[in-house]
Length: 253
Image 1 (cartoon, rainbow, N blue to C red):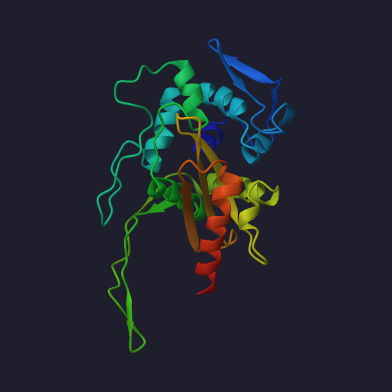
Image 2 (image 1 turned 180 degrees about the horizontal axis):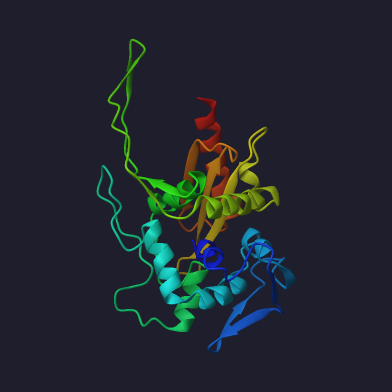
Protein backbone atom coordinates (compact mmCIF):
# COMPACT_ATOMS: atom_id res chain seq x y z
CA UNK A 1 0.00 0.00 0.00
CA UNK A 2 2.83 2.38 0.90
CA UNK A 3 4.66 1.37 -2.27
CA UNK A 4 1.56 2.23 -4.30
CA UNK A 5 1.53 5.75 -2.88
CA UNK A 6 5.28 6.21 -3.42
CA UNK A 7 5.13 5.03 -7.03
CA UNK A 8 1.89 6.83 -7.89
CA UNK A 9 3.21 10.21 -6.74
CA UNK A 10 6.57 9.83 -8.45
CA UNK A 11 8.58 9.81 -5.23
CA UNK A 12 10.41 6.77 -6.57
CA UNK A 13 10.28 4.33 -9.46
CA UNK A 14 11.19 0.66 -9.18
CA UNK A 15 14.66 1.57 -10.51
CA UNK A 16 15.30 4.58 -8.23
CA UNK A 17 18.55 4.01 -6.33
CA UNK A 18 18.22 4.12 -2.54
CA UNK A 19 20.88 3.77 0.16
CA UNK A 20 20.85 2.73 3.79
CA UNK A 21 24.19 2.84 5.66
CA UNK A 22 22.94 0.68 8.54
CA UNK A 23 20.14 2.75 9.95
CA UNK A 24 18.14 5.84 9.05
CA UNK A 25 17.34 8.30 11.84
CA UNK A 26 14.05 10.20 11.63
CA UNK A 27 13.49 12.91 14.26
CA UNK A 28 15.94 11.16 16.54
CA UNK A 29 14.28 7.75 16.06
CA UNK A 30 16.65 5.14 14.55
CA UNK A 31 15.25 2.61 12.08
CA UNK A 32 17.61 -0.20 11.19
CA UNK A 33 18.22 -1.63 7.73
CA UNK A 34 19.44 -4.84 9.33
CA UNK A 35 15.99 -6.43 9.57
CA UNK A 36 17.00 -8.17 6.34
CA UNK A 37 20.49 -9.26 5.20
CA UNK A 38 20.06 -7.30 1.96
CA UNK A 39 19.11 -4.04 3.71
CA UNK A 40 22.48 -2.35 4.18
CA UNK A 41 23.92 -0.80 1.03
CA UNK A 42 22.82 0.78 -2.24
CA UNK A 43 20.21 -0.82 -4.50
CA UNK A 44 17.05 -0.02 -6.52
CA UNK A 45 13.78 0.63 -4.72
CA UNK A 46 12.34 -2.60 -6.11
CA UNK A 47 14.89 -4.48 -3.98
CA UNK A 48 13.76 -2.58 -0.89
CA UNK A 49 10.27 -3.89 -1.65
CA UNK A 50 11.40 -7.44 -2.37
CA UNK A 51 13.45 -7.73 0.79
CA UNK A 52 11.22 -5.59 3.08
CA UNK A 53 13.77 -2.95 4.06
CA UNK A 54 11.90 -1.06 6.79
CA UNK A 55 14.24 1.94 6.89
CA UNK A 56 13.86 2.72 3.19
CA UNK A 57 10.08 2.56 3.45
CA UNK A 58 10.21 4.82 6.50
CA UNK A 59 12.33 7.36 4.64
CA UNK A 60 10.17 7.39 1.51
CA UNK A 61 6.99 7.24 3.59
CA UNK A 62 7.98 10.53 5.21
CA UNK A 63 8.34 12.02 1.72
CA UNK A 64 4.89 10.66 0.86
CA UNK A 65 3.50 12.45 3.93
CA UNK A 66 0.44 11.85 6.03
CA UNK A 67 -1.84 13.24 3.29
CA UNK A 68 -0.42 10.90 0.67
CA UNK A 69 -0.39 7.82 2.90
CA UNK A 70 -3.90 8.48 4.18
CA UNK A 71 -5.22 9.02 0.65
CA UNK A 72 -3.90 5.72 -0.71
CA UNK A 73 -4.84 3.79 2.44
CA UNK A 74 -8.43 5.01 2.40
CA UNK A 75 -8.77 4.16 -1.28
CA UNK A 76 -7.77 0.61 -0.37
CA UNK A 77 -10.46 0.63 2.33
CA UNK A 78 -8.70 1.60 5.56
CA UNK A 79 -10.63 3.67 8.14
CA UNK A 80 -13.99 2.42 6.85
CA UNK A 81 -16.02 -0.71 7.32
CA UNK A 82 -15.79 -3.16 4.43
CA UNK A 83 -19.26 -3.93 3.00
CA UNK A 84 -19.62 -7.67 3.47
CA UNK A 85 -22.12 -10.42 4.13
CA UNK A 86 -20.93 -10.59 7.75
CA UNK A 87 -20.06 -7.72 10.06
CA UNK A 88 -16.45 -6.60 9.62
CA UNK A 89 -13.99 -4.64 11.74
CA UNK A 90 -12.36 -1.48 10.43
CA UNK A 91 -8.70 -1.49 9.53
CA UNK A 92 -7.10 1.71 10.85
CA UNK A 93 -4.20 3.85 9.74
CA UNK A 94 -3.69 5.18 13.26
CA UNK A 95 -5.71 5.61 16.45
CA UNK A 96 -8.36 8.35 16.56
CA UNK A 97 -6.44 10.32 19.22
CA UNK A 98 -2.97 9.76 17.78
CA UNK A 99 -0.49 12.62 17.49
CA UNK A 100 0.46 12.42 13.84
CA UNK A 101 4.19 12.88 14.26
CA UNK A 102 6.85 12.24 11.66
CA UNK A 103 8.05 9.23 13.67
CA UNK A 104 4.55 7.72 13.66
CA UNK A 105 4.35 8.36 9.92
CA UNK A 106 7.69 6.64 9.34
CA UNK A 107 6.78 3.55 11.36
CA UNK A 108 3.30 3.36 9.84
CA UNK A 109 4.86 3.43 6.36
CA UNK A 110 6.52 0.05 6.97
CA UNK A 111 3.54 -1.53 8.69
CA UNK A 112 4.02 -0.72 12.38
CA UNK A 113 2.96 2.38 14.29
CA UNK A 114 -0.72 2.15 15.22
CA UNK A 115 -1.69 0.42 11.99
CA UNK A 116 -4.33 -2.29 12.38
CA UNK A 117 -5.44 -4.56 9.55
CA UNK A 118 -7.86 -7.46 9.20
CA UNK A 119 -7.12 -10.48 7.00
CA UNK A 120 -10.04 -9.48 4.78
CA UNK A 121 -8.54 -6.01 4.31
CA UNK A 122 -5.19 -7.50 3.33
CA UNK A 123 -6.85 -9.94 0.94
CA UNK A 124 -8.46 -6.93 -0.70
CA UNK A 125 -5.04 -5.33 -1.21
CA UNK A 126 -3.80 -8.46 -2.98
CA UNK A 127 -7.00 -8.57 -5.04
CA UNK A 128 -6.63 -4.95 -6.18
CA UNK A 129 -3.18 -5.69 -7.59
CA UNK A 130 -4.40 -8.93 -9.15
CA UNK A 131 -7.47 -7.24 -10.70
CA UNK A 132 -5.50 -4.55 -12.47
CA UNK A 133 -6.24 -1.84 -9.93
CA UNK A 134 -9.94 -2.42 -9.29
CA UNK A 135 -11.57 -3.72 -6.13
CA UNK A 136 -14.59 -5.97 -6.30
CA UNK A 137 -16.84 -5.87 -3.25
CA UNK A 138 -16.17 -9.11 -1.34
CA UNK A 139 -19.02 -11.56 -0.84
CA UNK A 140 -19.56 -14.71 1.12
CA UNK A 141 -20.95 -17.17 -1.43
CA UNK A 142 -22.47 -20.46 -0.35
CA UNK A 143 -23.04 -22.86 -3.21
CA UNK A 144 -24.56 -26.31 -3.33
CA UNK A 145 -24.18 -28.63 -6.28
CA UNK A 146 -27.36 -30.52 -7.12
CA UNK A 147 -27.91 -32.39 -10.38
CA UNK A 148 -25.01 -30.54 -11.96
CA UNK A 149 -26.52 -27.15 -11.20
CA UNK A 150 -24.98 -24.45 -9.01
CA UNK A 151 -27.48 -23.06 -6.50
CA UNK A 152 -27.24 -19.88 -4.48
CA UNK A 153 -25.25 -17.80 -6.97
CA UNK A 154 -25.24 -14.04 -6.42
CA UNK A 155 -25.41 -10.99 -8.64
CA UNK A 156 -22.04 -9.62 -9.79
CA UNK A 157 -20.31 -7.58 -7.09
CA UNK A 158 -19.84 -3.82 -7.43
CA UNK A 159 -16.30 -2.83 -8.42
CA UNK A 160 -14.41 0.44 -8.01
CA UNK A 161 -11.03 1.60 -9.23
CA UNK A 162 -8.39 2.05 -6.53
CA UNK A 163 -5.21 2.55 -8.56
CA UNK A 164 -4.40 2.71 -12.27
CA UNK A 165 -3.91 -0.43 -14.31
CA UNK A 166 -0.33 0.68 -15.02
CA UNK A 167 0.49 0.99 -11.33
CA UNK A 168 -1.17 -2.35 -10.58
CA UNK A 169 1.03 -3.95 -13.25
CA UNK A 170 4.17 -2.55 -11.61
CA UNK A 171 3.07 -3.78 -8.19
CA UNK A 172 2.29 -7.19 -9.66
CA UNK A 173 5.88 -7.46 -10.94
CA UNK A 174 7.24 -6.38 -7.55
CA UNK A 175 5.16 -9.01 -5.76
CA UNK A 176 6.28 -11.71 -8.18
CA UNK A 177 9.86 -10.67 -7.43
CA UNK A 178 9.29 -11.36 -3.72
CA UNK A 179 8.53 -15.01 -4.44
CA UNK A 180 11.11 -15.46 -7.18
CA UNK A 181 13.86 -14.09 -4.91
CA UNK A 182 13.21 -16.67 -2.22
CA UNK A 183 11.39 -14.52 0.31
CA UNK A 184 8.34 -16.82 0.37
CA UNK A 185 9.47 -20.31 -0.52
CA UNK A 186 6.18 -21.76 0.69
CA UNK A 187 4.36 -20.58 -2.44
CA UNK A 188 6.80 -21.93 -5.01
CA UNK A 189 4.35 -24.08 -6.97
CA UNK A 190 5.35 -26.10 -10.05
CA UNK A 191 4.17 -24.37 -13.21
CA UNK A 192 2.46 -21.51 -11.34
CA UNK A 193 3.86 -17.98 -11.00
CA UNK A 194 2.76 -16.46 -7.69
CA UNK A 195 2.91 -12.84 -6.56
CA UNK A 196 3.14 -12.18 -2.84
CA UNK A 197 4.29 -9.98 0.01
CA UNK A 198 5.58 -11.01 3.39
CA UNK A 199 4.83 -9.25 6.65
CA UNK A 200 6.18 -9.57 10.19
CA UNK A 201 4.13 -7.42 12.56
CA UNK A 202 5.37 -6.82 16.09
CA UNK A 203 2.65 -7.82 18.56
CA UNK A 204 3.98 -5.73 21.46
CA UNK A 205 4.78 -8.69 23.69
CA UNK A 206 8.09 -9.69 22.17
CA UNK A 207 6.50 -11.84 19.48
CA UNK A 208 5.44 -11.09 15.90
CA UNK A 209 2.41 -12.00 13.83
CA UNK A 210 3.37 -13.73 10.58
CA UNK A 211 1.58 -12.28 7.53
CA UNK A 212 1.52 -13.18 3.87
CA UNK A 213 -0.69 -12.01 1.02
CA UNK A 214 -0.62 -13.48 -2.49
CA UNK A 215 -2.36 -13.96 -5.82
CA UNK A 216 -2.03 -16.59 -8.54
CA UNK A 217 -1.47 -17.35 -11.34
CA UNK A 218 0.32 -14.00 -11.72
CA UNK A 219 -0.29 -13.72 -15.48
CA UNK A 220 -4.06 -14.30 -15.10
CA UNK A 221 -4.97 -14.26 -11.39
CA UNK A 222 -7.85 -16.41 -10.16
CA UNK A 223 -7.29 -16.33 -6.42
CA UNK A 224 -6.13 -13.80 -3.81
CA UNK A 225 -5.14 -15.00 -0.34
CA UNK A 226 -4.28 -13.43 3.01
CA UNK A 227 -2.78 -15.48 5.84
CA UNK A 228 -2.00 -14.33 9.38
CA UNK A 229 -0.52 -16.60 12.04
CA UNK A 230 -0.81 -14.81 15.36
CA UNK A 231 2.49 -14.81 17.29
CA UNK A 232 3.83 -17.04 14.49
CA UNK A 233 7.06 -15.21 13.67
CA UNK A 234 8.27 -14.51 10.15
CA UNK A 235 5.69 -14.16 7.38
CA UNK A 236 7.90 -15.59 4.65
CA UNK A 237 8.69 -18.81 6.49
CA UNK A 238 5.52 -19.36 8.57
CA UNK A 239 2.56 -17.83 6.70
CA UNK A 240 3.57 -18.39 3.08
CA UNK A 241 3.43 -22.23 3.22
CA UNK A 242 -0.20 -21.96 4.36
CA UNK A 243 -0.97 -19.63 1.46
CA UNK A 244 0.74 -22.14 -0.83
CA UNK A 245 -1.57 -24.91 0.34
CA UNK A 246 -4.64 -22.73 -0.22
CA UNK A 247 -3.52 -21.69 -3.71
CA UNK A 248 -2.64 -25.26 -4.68
CA UNK A 249 -6.07 -26.48 -3.58
CA UNK A 250 -7.94 -23.63 -5.30
CA UNK A 251 -6.18 -23.98 -8.64
CA UNK A 252 -6.64 -27.75 -8.64
CA UNK A 253 -10.42 -27.42 -8.71
